[in-house]
Length: 396
Image (cartoon, rainbow, N blue to C red; front, side, top):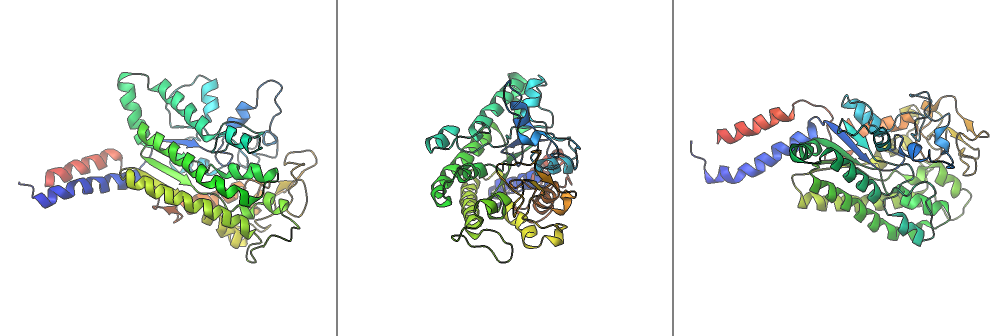
């Protein structure tokens, strides 16, 4: 059967469409994560076990009490969004890269997590030049990317393994953060005005884009890129600005309007940058995860989501109007912890409860808060899709 010129010209588009649908809706064999405390499943815990180092407060109870019944290095009472993603794909929870490295268990497995609590997108040298020293870690996004490359080279050293690793990345879901929030959190915590940080935002976005492009060059094809949360609803920020006559509150939520507008500015620039990547790499799936609006659901209507003790006050903290005190962290002997974390959206002032993360997960991966829409179901395998594409070619 002869192929008409019009059908022939459509073939690349049809193939691309089929491939795009496959990656966006099909199964992923692994999850690779970068980011900060919203995704860290234990890296900072491992990195903090050096001699004479002070263990971070989230290595002590009540952290982890809800699901794991012990601290795991997660900055919450239980599971994080990355944990819910893994469970939805029937995978084991994704191990921290430091656990893999220290146990010499080098292998591709079903994923690896390079996220580190306290990490920034921009390198520590940038922030130090602005007078801000990261007391948590110097594991910026660039550092995490180098860790990833080192790990990848160790499992893809030669020959067929290198080709196999290309396929591994092609079938992996890359969770790019959340990252960037600490580029603003750390300066605010030491007293820098939020307006001064607007100039940081394009630099943060450029750093995220650079990392995505590096991973695309290595063979990755599907990315979930989260935006910033509504930081104006954070118990920590609400405490910092408490009593100021220069701030305005949203009457419907009690959140700080100025800070939420800042988060929206970050998210707008991020989405513009992701659109540019899509134009250059139309065969790569770039999925924007709208953490901001997914979370705003329970800040607007906490009771609807079971947060009967509200969405702004921390479950665990050192007192005050929002139960947050920078000098008395959650797990400090003088801190207080609520009896029912599932009735709170905020866990420790800076981080959310497992229940809140689960709402965000469902809104993103089973709802409509991703662009393009992410469908975590696996109705067809990649092999079936390849067979379908082959049949498509043969039909012309």
